[in-house]
Length: 357
Image 1 (cartoon, rainbow, N blue to C red):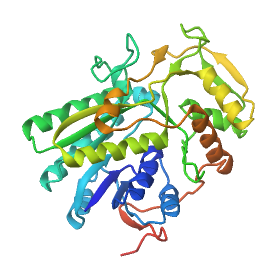
Image 2 (cartoon, one colour; image 1 turned 60 degrees about the vertical axis):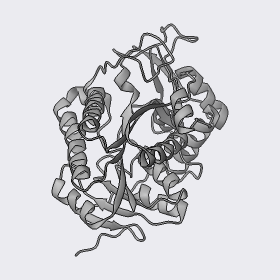
Image 3 (cartoon, helix red, strand yellow; image 1 turned 30 degrees about the vertical axis):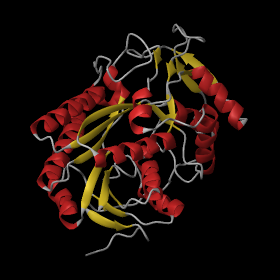
Image 4 (cartoon, one colour; image 1 turned 60 degrees about the horizontal axis):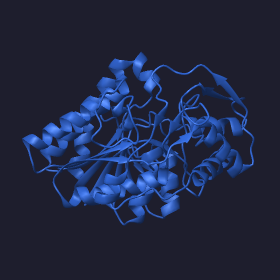
């Protein structure tokens, strides 16, 4: 029996693949590589010494996805795949609703059809909107403020309805805070397309010389240094959170929701200082206008995950910065692989060739 991972070539997905393989799970990855590279999975195999069955297909292609269920014995699904840029979601909202919601409905429909009723869903702390207080617990009001966040919230709601209609389902919803860092090997990490939307890859792009200066959006917030405070979590800690969530999902039924964060808030300037301390690289900064809708302070209450999943974030901000820089400095252009792939095909992880038949 295998675990099906959608979006397994992405930043969080690839790191979770490593931790699952290290725990002895057999995994199958489905990805359309729209915002990721097959090279990341090749490196997952290199790190673990294990192979992966990888299908190159779009989750909107329900017929091809059904073939994956037909020819494999699937025990559970971890659903990472989805569009995730907040700004883009405002400009292209229909694209986000179609992709993030429709694909999840297709997956759940096939899971129901083939009696694979165990799901771990990748949600986001954006479902909380602008919270009035911190730390943020799972019981806080939900008020997503952009199309990306609303797609996550809508999926959360219909997943809970699925369980109400069929209580054989076991569904775990994980609300991430701010994943950064990279695998300690330096072989895999975050490889955004274009100018990064998130703080750490922006910092590392400046550090490696591809961007001239780090733009900091506002320094007039009611925080210790005026810059926004966020809960940054090492991607390997986050990956291990998925392993813990999968273990619970396989052994129970119901819907469970967990924050995955450290419970510690760091300001933008504190992250810059930690990066400079961990790497010895000076980061030039430029203070610019704050972005509309940005909260001053946002960090998690992760106690529910500690209590029920026996999971805590273990890595420090120093680890996050050092590992991010190790990845970027060794891979200044990311995975720098431009494969021309035909859709859909099965990729052989041993040699990453696409068979003609």
